[in-house]
Length: 203
Length: 86
Image (cartoon, rainbow over all chains, first blue to last red; front, top):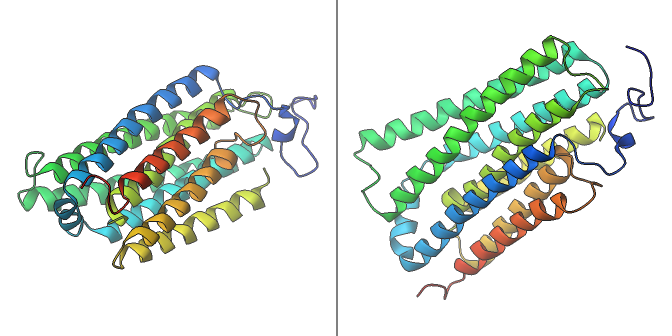
C-alpha cells in the first residue's frame, strides 16, 4: 500500500491521532448505538424502580443468582472488548494477520459468554423459574435475554469484520466499517457493565 | 491509543470487575452500592472514551453516550437509596 497522509503511522505506532476530532466509524451506526442505549436505559430504570417497590423480594431473588457466573461473563466481555480494540489498533498499523487473530479472540470470548449464560438459563429453567415466577425474574430473564440477543448479533458483526480483515478490506486507509462494528461490540460490553452491578451485585 | 494503553485499560477493567464482585459478596447497603456505581462509571467511561474511540472526538456523540452512562447510573443510585420507593 502506498504511504499517504491517510495511511502514515503516528509516532506512537498508531493511525488514530491524525483523526482530528472526527467520529470513528459511520454516523448512522452511532445513531443506532444511541437508540439501543436508550432502550436499555428504559429497562434499567424500570428494574430499579420496580426493585424500590419490593426490595425484600428483589434482594432475596438476587441471592438465587450465580454471581460468579455474572462476574465471569463480565471478564469475558471486557476481554473481548480488549481483543477488538487490539484488532482495530493492529489494522491501523496494517498488521492484518495479527488483527484477524485478535478478532478471533474477541469472538471466542463472546462465545464463552453465551455458553455461561446458556448454562445459567438452563439451571434456572430446570428449577422451574419462568417469566411469570415473580417481578424479579420477569426483569432478570427479559433484560438478560435481550442483552443475550445483542451478544449474538455482535458476534455476527465480528465474524463479518474478521472475514473483511482476512480479505484485506480494512487497512489504515479504510477503517470506517471496522470501527463501526467495533463500536457496536463495545456498546454490548458497555450495557453489561451497567447490567452486572444492577442485577447481580447491588442490594 | 497505543496498544500499551489498550492493555492497561483492560487490566483496570478486570481489577474493577473483581472488586465489584467482591463487594457483592458483602452485606451491601448505601455506601457499598455507591462504590459499585462509581466503579461502573469508571469502567463505562474507559470503554466509551478509549475502546469506542470517543476520546477527543467533537461533540455531540461523546456527550450523548457519556451522558447516557451518567444519567442511567444516577437514576439507579437514587432508586437504591434506602428510603426510595418505600
